[in-house]
Length: 251
Image (cartoon, rainbow, N blue to C red; front, side, top):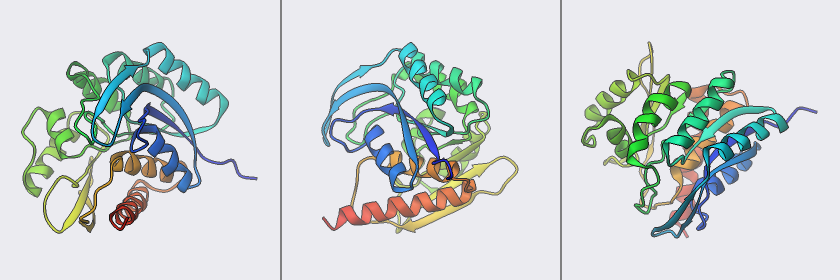
């Protein structure tokens, strides 16, 4: 009997159930992949606001990751909310010790409701210490601008320029998400070294749903853990998120 793929999910909780590890676990389950959670923070939040954040210590985060990797064969590490520099360094140290395990990073800086989830002082560590160890980073346009220290891109050409600039900072691959852009299509663009950009488009829906960044990154991780290529994993993940937003818009 084949071993079920496992993804080590590193991120925070969301008491509303709208994002974070709750979304990660549900998404992975939909793809038939098991989740091993390592909690970085416990948040008290609704669909409208973040009321409190209680960060886990770096030592506890690393211990959770170590225990998960000892208990199960980890195919991929999916990383979400980290919050502070010590947590970022703890996750980076794990990836350095397990370079054979690919990692997908969703650089969560603020919640969908607008609450900040990552200290500004930690952004340099996120960019310089962790991102070079990840196989894929999945920023939206505001996150990409923040990580580059630039204004948010307002056109497709500006977003492409920022994606290429971000790739040069040491990332192996960057998927720039177009959900915050305008136009009839929501287009995500994959940038890799020595490859032309690959675009993944879907019609832009009127509905909205929290936690779509968590869903997309987890669905990509599920594909990679199941042996799919990066492009096929992204394609399947985007279709999955599109379907979930479509369902939400009819409720």
